[in-house]
Image (cartoon, rainbow, N blue to C red; front, side, top):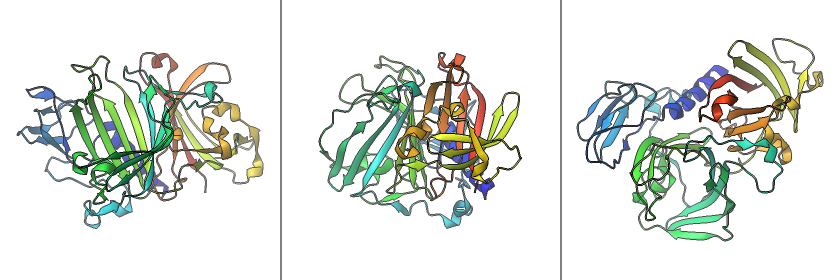
Length: 398
């Protein structure tokens, strides 16, 4: 069972690493000639509505202005279903057009984590500012409800950022924005709100290039979207596609959005016994920790399997896990955004370190997923690079 879960989480992560999913998407270009796409990280077959087709070349494909570009997971032009779990093992058992979620008249929370700002500077939650009033670093959230006539937005901490820090929200009251035509929203919850959202509606990849009314707010970005049927969490990732005419900055902002499509999952608990495996550049370390409130303990007994007797865990090693800052929250719980953010902190030797957490629930038991930690080379962060020197996987011990 654990192997199946690991396979599923790896596949979900790969969707966002290469920003490719199972449905077609529209590319809107700002030039009048065929051009190269943003680079992808895998070879994949594509077709455009203007007749261009083939395998991506070193990660690139060609497209023309206004093209619809369809990607296929195989060359034979047949979209294969990703085998994320038992339910999707047989494509005949899954109807991607069947309504999976009815968003109308439901209040939803939209979490956002800024991964990089518009100039490509990497964003981190600064643990030293944890006690600073209203500080959330690169983490924001909004609350909204879609109705048949429009969208209600409720007061929240907001999701606007200056560089890598959330700007204080000035929203004090509920606001309503009427929507006459929901069909103008391509993909996502708004686009399918009236008739219900299918798996196809909530999965996809798109490149968009459009200008809004205020000059300087043009959007040129890629957006990947994935909906997990078991956890009922919609995950979206966007990334600026580089400098464009009319944009004064480098257009490299990167965001992660997480929208739980069911109630009462705004806090995750991490108390309990965890087995970890740290893969470094020269060695692999394994062990077990006990998380108890805001403290972390190890046992003085070394065995290949975790000792399940919690009384054996008496060595306080909390100072080794300063980047688990969310354990200091009330009730030692975290939002899903907090455990998907990068972290800046000072270690036991007062040296600045950078890590990044990933936690994507893969079943209706939201607290059963593996927790991943990526540790980065501090010297490369200033160069806007995430050079990994170790990866640690934490798994609950049942």
